[in-house]
Length: 350
Image (cartoon, rainbow, N blue to C red; front, side, top):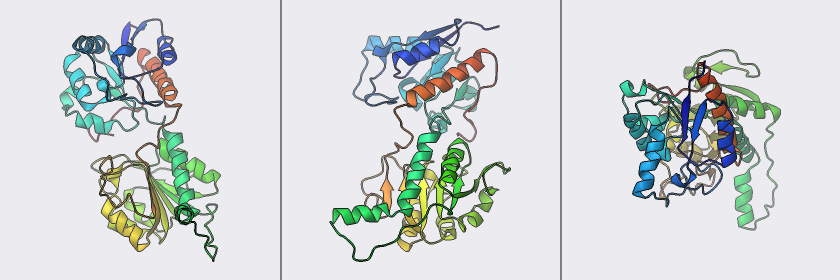
């Protein structure tokens, strides 16, 4: 039996997608007031325009709407502070769906204790971003193998080298993916389509079809010794902090292409710079950094072997639709009393 539930949408969302949520079940009430959320500056701009400000009356209406719901689509104000406030003020809260695939950092930043976090569930949009992230990773691999950085430098200098330098074939090369979750497996699928052999790491070591070898982090140095390219998809946790350190970069073959679409804290950036300068890493394609925005004085900005992407590789024009589809599927499961997928681990925060 389905009991009446109220869903409040806390972030910007297109009207037709709001209607999709309403259509899931006649028992639900969906609350959404576009005038109370900041307008999007681009597709899937969940935080909206930072210049937006509510009047005192609008602020009261926004929080009254959220506090009347058992289910939230998005964190209030898309912020850890908003999550902390709704957890304090809404005793009937049962479930929040986060827009991010890696919402653990925001949950940790909210400062909420385990006693509060156990009162409601938080799910992520993990998997929604797998394809755009995997495509970005494939671009990074191809850039490294096809010398795109050097080509760009020659073009900027209008230089036509006297000696033509060959590029490397992706086909037949070895890829190591750290983190064989949904993003890692989608990266592996594309890599195999390019003819790569793929190995990788997983917290629970088990056979995975299409993956040559699966290891835990303790087996990572041996995998890296065989890699022509490495793609990191790992989240930022206490267990992954600066996992890619001097020892791991030294374990790589000279000239390895390195791509990071996980979290910046997984990489010791000083060690990465050393590896770039000594040739262990031939090219690095980075979408995430230990500190974001990347500080202006970071040597990564101007390094000739580095592509800097401002943490945008997961974004696509289809993101709102894909997240809504994921939420609608979860909502059906929630209403039917099933187990919600992609719950935030409130101990390790991923």
